[in-house]
Length: 332
Image (tube, rainbow, N blue to C red):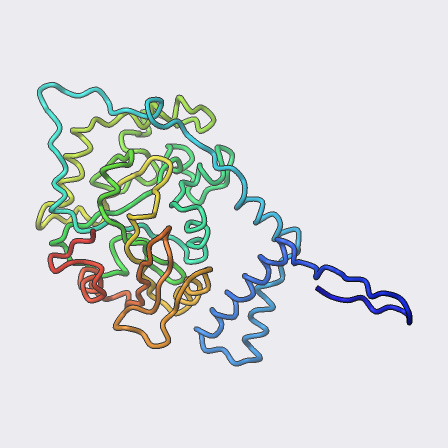
């Protein structure tokens, strides 16, 4: 509380301390993130201020628009009994169950600057969920053939070994990789392919035609092109020892992936990504790295590890070293 200056003999008037607006709070958070990124890049104090200033040249209206988008209700698709089903089963070809003991972990790559939004939402959201049918999306095919209605993952067997900076896992400068337990496959609606569908829901082809994002029935129909047997067979092919399908295989999860209980680690391959992640509210950076562990973030009620790893490192070994994966290479 502040006391306003008064003339002699008058009783001081108490004034409420002005609280910052939502837009001002966002600008302050962005400034902190900019300074953290600059420090991680080894900038001098002068260049640090200049870098932060350049990043902060957003108007209050732009900040308010960002807040509005973050607070906007998600564009929802039908779930439960009204959600997509599998294509009719072939009686002569029953579905083989997923052999979870052969699945090591799953990954999803995204820009580090978007991780905070995902944590606030509690899930990895599809582009459709965030922006709706009229949104602007990076790949045209995602909009034309329905991929934007789901969240992509790559799944890796516990026997495969690959470099973090390869296999299309979303690594790269300024990006992070969310490592997840395959337990999500037991609860989410998902489809699988042994190749990169380049923006198409598995089963959707150019011959099938475009998916009308303005028609929920059309979206549901596209998700119902693959049978359970086809999905499981495609998925397990990518888990077979010696197969080289893993790098291009993908899974598409309907609408989103809840993160609590599923996300087990975040991998960064550059210092700028580490700084951005450590600037997220609630993040706990370590003063001295513990092996490849540089800090922790909170996902729901769980604390998960943030790793700084070379892009040429083997991800399986990095996860074992950090205690994220067991001796067999499984993340649970």
